[in-house]
Length: 634
Image (cartoon, rainbow, N blue to C red; front, side):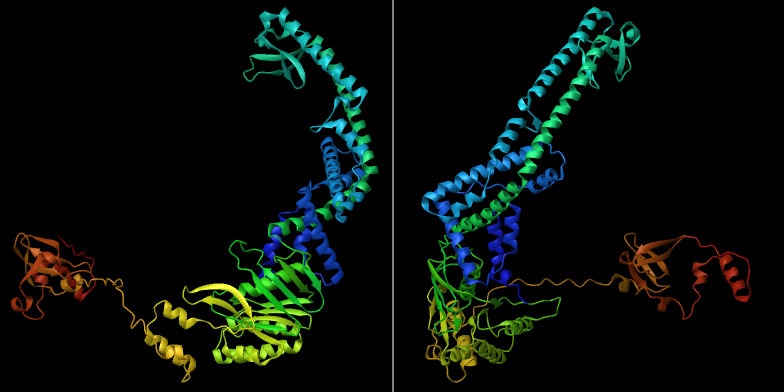
């Protein structure tokens, strides 16, 4: 079954829509949305979208925030655990966002927009917000969070200063023992750099040493006393910070219910305002919703198409007409027209505005469609098979409240049989009482529509001179494919046009195609030639013409020799020259006297080419096995 949202491109609408939302809950709601079957709910959702659009037009975009992490923070607070300074600041920022949103909604009350009264469901918990704001900053508890904390931190600063003063005093008294002129912090201790050989000259504890080992870092005894005091003060500081964090966490826990209500309200408003923003993006309008099975669209557009180039669509279905058969040339806009109608109807039932100047749209129990070739290689379905599978699914689900769209009805098979199947499908749709839009090229289907009282033809206009579609839908007129016009304008010869007309219409050829005066023949253009591979001589076969015992002349020295070994696969011969044998390419050898003219048949060439010793050994081998070796020499 075809995915209706994908077929109508509603999935792309949702992608754009979700970009206008801030909260994850609103984005999830957009992803999961589908058509609503309650008329009153659809009307209410449309009213929300209209009010959100007006709100944005009058006052501007709402100050929305994502509210990420708030639910987790509230869960920690309600459980009794202590919130960190960062988490408390997140709570404070969310409450500040609630305050800004309340102010925004309050400004809308002057326009008597009921959406503005969502402000009453928001509570910015002023006391908690201010308490956190005064106590936390940049992930740290502020000094002014309590009097005790401020005093402790002053004492800490004073103690740290004393530590450095004591260390510096020791350094001044013992300059000759120092390896540097300033103190340093090591593991929280104020240390002075002392040369290793003088470490026992300074009273204190060794805290660290340099990488080379030549310097030791000693905490002077006087500074160590201040360090102990500092640690006590830091424990006191930590305890006071924790007390403040627990106190603020308890306040957050007390207000958790109201904060959660704030989050729910913000998420709902985020969803509603995202619909208004989407409507503004394509200049949408609120449609009139009815249950009378009536669709009327004035100056409709596909919301994903450029408004500047999109030709407005005028459309009406219902009031005694259940189906429209749209015909016209390819690329004439038939598919766009039916998708525009179906997508706007689908969007309306999801509570979205439609891309029309004015629209009256009926409620539909389901949207059923067969668009695209549907070919599925993995399931071994051809284009026609896929169409039939989809059509059968549609006929199983269709009822009087369905809205059906089918593109290129009956295509993908033999034209005669496809036409018959198309008419059979239309008969079933007519019986169901559903509203349907169908595109086709079959003339018999056009005739069928003319005969039926509740089905009408429609056509997409086409400029035959410029060969450009005009994208105007005219209901009540029969269209033509314009295939012959297009082919003739593009240069198809008259003979081919006449042949095509006769094949299409038989003996009853339309007058305009009986006599054609224009292109006489197809002018052939030059085309690239295939370069065939040159046939190369077989060097091996050429070399094989030399036989054992042939007298040959070896070039370039023009010496006479005898072939003592025929050519190998590379065309290399072995030739016996006076006092030596050589290997040589057959191309450097020319036949001087053939072996048949020099020697008798079955002549033993070993007499010429073998040594006396080898001949004796070979003779013995023929009689019995002997342990001898035949030696070959070049």
